Length: 360
Figure (cartoon, rainbow, N blue to C red):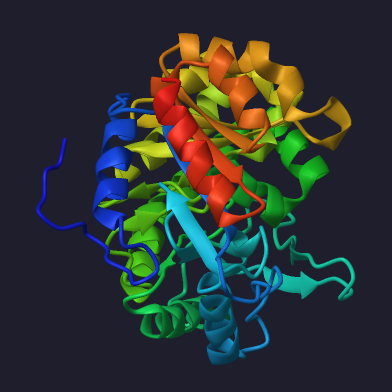
């Protein structure tokens, strides 16, 4: 475990940052100090709440305006326990494919989403998949991260972005029907495409870290490490069986986890569960963020699965409020849980942390 006199990141919004960093390091080692990891947020006492910028903010180039609003919003929040003051920029879920050459389209304002326009008709004739440093969306992303880093200095971390890399990038570039067909018809071309996409992962990751001055790192799911972390995922894996997963998705996820050194995985929907044993064996993957999906019942209904993941030695990310956390605490291993909790006010947030100490 890293031992330091001062935390890698200091902020005027969290005077207990040194203690929080110590607890995060214990979490990554599957240890506890006197309670489970709990990142709890609430409205800050004595100030009027300011809403954080909406999803996709900044894509129009108004970077400074968005940065100032994100900072103002963070200053009205209580960052309790292991909650790290941070803000994650995003122009949408398909941005990785856009950096590699796809066009980016935005929906109506009411939908608050964007998507990549598929650019590959045939992998045989498609050009090499590579990052053009002059790509307009790549340059805007870096510029946005730099503005955020300058504005947030001493206050907030720039958290990493929503990155759909590996097979999710191929999905965005080719489209779902085309990619599923290609896995059967031209698997050797998928081998080549995946190798090209994966060769971009580390350079893209490190360039974003440099632009956002991510010394002390929060991933897209806001887990903290003083060195490096992020969230990995492969939503496309829900559409493929174990053979294809092990050929393409699993090696890519293993490469990403090795680069990050420790990470969480966003795990989206019951269709993904066929791959759970393989996923839980990925070196460097320490925590699963299970997302059941709206059609599959509330998170609380999946306690058996959460306990099954813990039994494999991995931690679980548990979204909760101050009432639910007491139920989960009775059922889950406190050394293998990341509670991401919301409280109605600062006093209740602090009382919840005290309760966890008293009941662990």
